[in-house]
Image 1 (cartoon, rainbow, N blue to C red):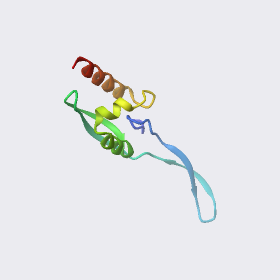
Image 2 (cartoon, rainbow, N blue to C red):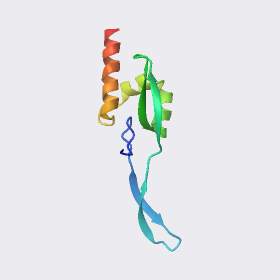
Image 3 (cartoon, rainbow, N blue to C red):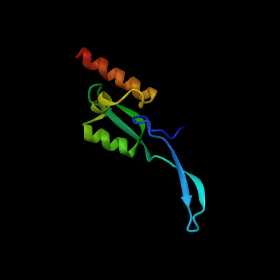
Image 4 (cartoon, one colour):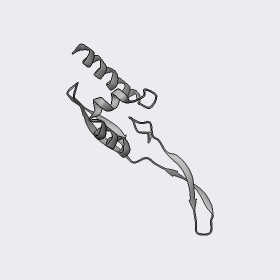
Length: 95
């Protein structure tokens, strides 16, 4: 399973470990991913997603999953998140 946030597209970054003697070795900085269940207000059902902690805070700040996906760019979202976004837009248009 890849270590990429399904809502923001945030993935691993690379950098250096620097020792006291200034030796540099390559390392990876992994995003803080959590398996969470987010509930859509429009659809009224839960969705299990692998989300970074930063994205989870942003979802809370924007007022829920529906509001977050409404503003999110399609490039950053996973296929699963894009399907949820499309279903939410369809349900809002029908209502």
